[in-house]
Image (cartoon, rainbow, N blue to C red):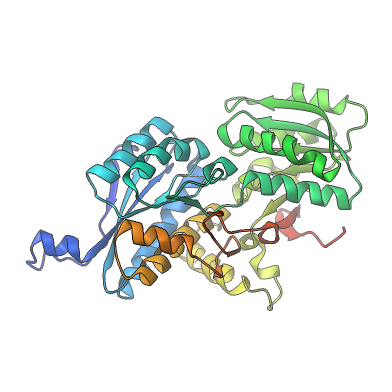
Length: 388
């Protein structure tokens, strides 16, 4: 099977095998679509999303489905190509007749698909990071990951506590990196931050020494912030250490919140801080934390099934799927418009990313408290103590 081929995953009970007519089969299932970057440069995001959706749809169906109907999950792999993502989105609407969509690994792919689902009036829960996915609010578009704007605010909040206000920036030119850079520039004055130098790198760049040398030689820089995802931030982190810049705090974004970043960056990752979901430090949360049960159970289930370390990216897919499932239950219907209305009414949903409270003006439903500031110590994630 080609990487970009359809990965159709029919999880309904074998109605055809038992002689039921195809019409009855269709009526007794709930078709949910997904377009993910399972292969390609964003596969470290898309692969755990794909595995999470398949794993939990299986579990939901084994437990009787949703309102007595099995979920039929139709997944396409866009390979990180936004044009392919749009093509697959059209196919999900026109050919597969899905009632809702959970997917969109990257900001670029998500933005390419939004017009398709908006026009078709089918709810789309994106797994991409940039704020532009839900700002401005579009009637049928929602998302589960914290926004890049929130990441900037959480980083600046932490910098302010450390009395560090003069920063250098180095950001990726990809959709997420460019969007987060713009958000950081926008909100920096609110936190008293001065951006003394602003560098960038392309998605195919394999060495950022030149840009980091400029930052190192800029007088007064007290910390460096790196908006980006993929391999770029790991290269930045390694080059940072090679240039002996370890005495200047380095902050990454939630776009690197997986163990693969630590593995790629190696010992250079020691001391790096980033905002991320509670999922990465579930075992370190107090028993009173409302997310502890959800994140520890997801981590155990995912790692047991896949033999791979959990990442926040799979967690975003978990949240998207269960927000949708709960909305379908409340709607007691597979009508896309009714499902959309119930997604928007989501209140008090405890997910891996935080406690979600959506509204007509907020299609994310998370605030800054959903972010935890983490520091990499001894090759693992650690909660930053307040004020440290």
